Image (cartoon, rainbow, N blue to C red; front, side, top):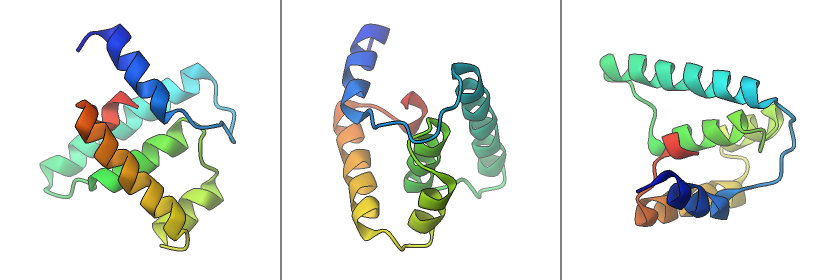
Length: 100
């Protein structure tokens, strides 16, 4: 899949920004998270796909800290369902959490 196609497919998953990170901050947060996932995987403790997508939404500024924590705690069933649907759709399109 070329870069332009991937960008077009990812547009479907764009959400309004509620936290304004700079592009540099987003890149650094994403890089740090990917490194953390790799480290966890080496210890057989890699987060599940839901946790990865949820974290990437936070990294992209699409969730506040409070929203993130509520979803993790299971207090936002609508958001949980939305993220699960997003994961299923991303799989259909051949995308992964790293593409976000």
